Image (cartoon, rainbow, N blue to C red):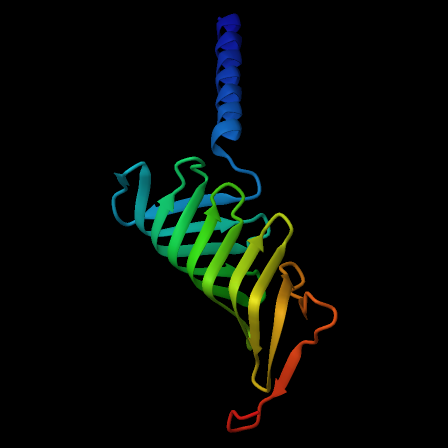
Length: 196
């Protein structure tokens, strides 16, 4: 009788162990969890997958969130981890800190590592700062936001034009500079009525 109980207990432990191994190997994502919400059906048209009104939400171990939404998305037929987005809005919400909002007409989003290349009428808002450009490269692997091609910066008291700006995601430090060392960043002080 006792031998039967030990055997049953041992089999239950093996079953629990196998279940945990399967769970951690196939279902549990370390570092990020991903939630894909699709409000309309997926249609396949000429080897492309069109998704409308989509939102991806990623949360890291520290509780920081990255949410990206788009009106439309096309899945790359050669690489299903890549989605080309239209009319894009993204928000990075930091624990106990300001958020960064990004908007653009188009973006290329990697569903595996969450890296995103925004392009065409890019706008970045964080705190009192506004940056506008044609391209923005968001890399979670490097913890870096690179903004380039016709960069314009606005704050309450000044504006500037430069070739490139970089924001360190972890410490939120911004570096604005020119690619050509012979050129200078153009800074304008704004008067109360908005004139230079």
